[in-house]
Length: 73
Image (tube, rainbow, N blue to C red):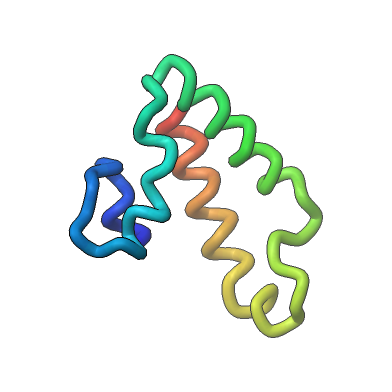
């Protein structure tokens, strides 16, 4: 589902459409807001609050956020 949100297209799968709510905004508005959200997560001491998720996913999540932050640039 996350990969399907890349183009923000309408899907026949109703659950998938829950992830495309920002498609109505042009890049001029969307990108600065998205960059701010990404920065917010990157500045957090921990993204994941539980020990299990922190240990298992924190490093990869931070790497993904940094990559997207650079792309949104």
